[in-house]
Length: 402
Image (cartoon, rainbow, N blue to C red):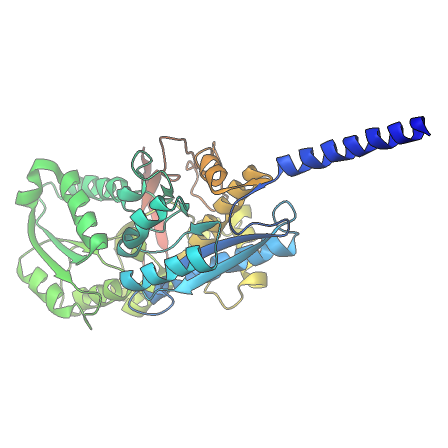
């Protein structure tokens, strides 16, 4: 009898120790269970920047693929993407709902500079990851002051440096006119563009005009910029205004060297509405393979993207660069979550996001890889220039950046 009881106690202790060890291995933050990882996002599905809404739809489609394949370590992604209409007050409202009501693990790839700026301090104060912000603003790459926020795409500093370098090579004494959005997006791009031109900025930029996102058109701004006599036009606009500006530049017979901000490079959302024939010669920056470029017609990575689009996002436009971008954002988050293993806490999410080493996405341009560290919160730091030839974007020049 004594022996039997003793054996029972030993087994009981062993089971208890085993259970405790198993539980110790699993650490969950808000929004995580044995079967689910809850992720939040704000995206402009309506309003002046609704062309970007396809990014959120593409990300949802990629997570659907991951869930169909069994999820991440057996957990399905529950993706809650809310419309903020590109309005900072609405972003604040929706973000608070995601954090305080839905209790998501993290915010992922929310779009916009002004919109993300509106919740930047709030999310850091709450210690909620603001991960892979869909903005080029360098303020989202500041681990010392905002350790819970990380960008993804090349910064405005990197992008505008490439444009300034090209302009000065193509036009040694350029006369530059700038159109910019009158918010954090446009003002910060203009600031970095001036910094890239250096001491000559005041001399070389002979005209600048801003617009509000609520403006029905930017026609009057474009007309005034042409009247300045500029031979270089730097178009720092989001898709709707960018398309209007491209069309107006052509319609009034202005033939400047036309630089287009990378955020509006989409053939589907910008160049096609503007008119492909009116977009010939425009130059922008790129870091992802463009789906309209026949260079990639036999590329394994782009063929995988096409197959995924056909199966999981058939209503998406194959010509829209933003659908490649959403796919790349989502792939990067999946890698971070896989690295987290069973320690799905907000703290470990940020540790793993800051520990991406030579991570290669097949839709990134050759020579560009993702690397992060505790002091480097900008995953993609390089780009290459491309020129529109009337049918597609054509890459040229070297890969530039850090």
